[in-house]
Image 1 (spheres, rainbow, N blue to C red):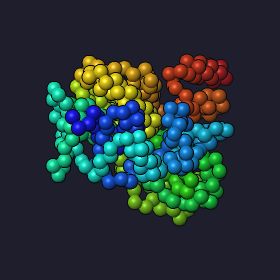
Image 2 (image 1 turned 135 degrees about the vertical axis):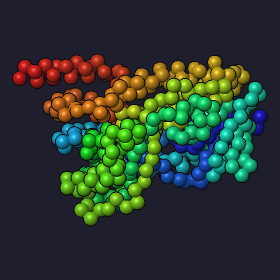
Image 3 (image 1 turned 30 degrees about the horizontal axis):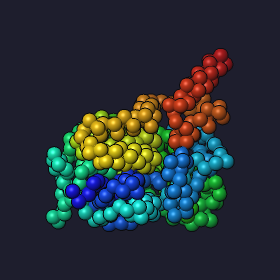
Image 4 (image 1 turned 180 degrees about the horizontal axis):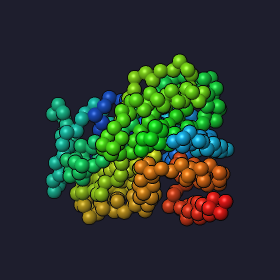
Length: 400
């Protein structure tokens, strides 16, 4: 076989996997349909916890800026403001961030093939063959599908059902200049989240960066949204811009410009592996189903896949049974959190103003929620502490 591993998709999941495979001496090719550098639909927020595992990205080459707090707004525009002495999220420009991740993979020995779209895959007893446009083809022992929510690898291997639900978002990245960013969002660059804005099952966001601001609105399940809410998301986005201006968070003369759209998975796939194939990141549905954040899970799934594939190639165990260890490891590392977030995502369809007011009046509970939302605390670790705090506040409200 020309390659031990072929990776389809050079986003955070694919490039991370390529880096860790190549540095272990595994002959790796990383393939992407786009010409790099390229942009991706994304708010560009990174949980601070990601730097514990991937400390090599904690440089100005990767990170555009850091945010030291946030304001969370309810549907009725009540707000909770939380500050921190440590960064709660790092912000990135995806065009720059993804390009640098590819370069790191190449520096460790991975081969990068850009501007080649994979159209189908053939899995044989002795290996895998990928076929693309213009007669392009590649052979390998194992394939990692890291090619996003509409993954060709997932579809071709039957791992993604046709009826899978997905979320949608509209966004734009607008350059304001560093001075204006600090004037509107302070040097701490406060993030703003508007929960259930205009009643949508999702939220609006404002991520200030070094010189630009990323604005967007997103819903968790596009199918339910279209059937039940009958609202044009672009109209919601226009109203969101007006609301931000009214609150003094943006210049009065700012326009939305060219609005961009994107899709994201709403839940993990039931199965993320088969003979000679693993799925990573969005292709596997690995995303926070409450917030839509996925870079952390993408990079971690890429590393988990790489570590297992090193074992598989070295031991010549590329069968489905051996590769099933991947999903077990995913579950142990962050699958429990995703399942809890999945339950929490049902709150988007319920009235939760009373719940919000409880948090608003309890600084400790508000801090816990901020840490969970930003990924700096595992919800599975502090869920009982949070529940006890919540029940305590409910009892106080009751006896009032």
